Length: 237
Image (cartoon, rainbow, N blue to C red; front, side, top):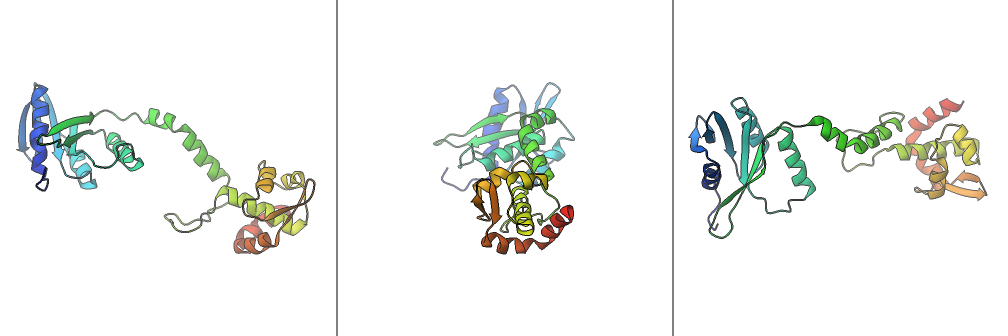
């Protein structure tokens, strides 16, 4: 369409779709953009040019009147398999709303149902994301305290892995050269050998077979974590 798209441009294709499905369709009924009736079944559709929070609020209010509430928006120009679009669809499904995409191929208009309103099955969603939950809990259990500010985006995050590295570096600095076995006995965990071998931060150095020391770089950089160092030393003193 050459002219600037308006919400009213979404009405006709949505109307035609529901008429083909055997509904009587009416526009602008008691603040509802579209109301469709078949026997005792009531369908409400809210029309908007973008999928916004205001649209979701508006549609959620219509659920006081019927379980069959759709939102209709122009078909997005971006990729339909993008992470952002998938997350938006998840939110719409979570609210138990249906989603209609209106497209304008050539001089025609077309309305397609992406998905219908349906009860959100929370248990199935959690089951599909079991691994992500386990990963989250593993990260939480690997942290000794809260060293991050929630909402931070451009700052370095203290992860369980980095904490583990700091703990190993702390004990090497305090006790001197140690083997992975000795470090594990001090409580550095099952990943000790892997951390020493990979040496992600450049803090460790093998002095002979099975024995490691802390590097000068490691000594300098763990100084930024005095609170954690004091905590770890209290555990072994």
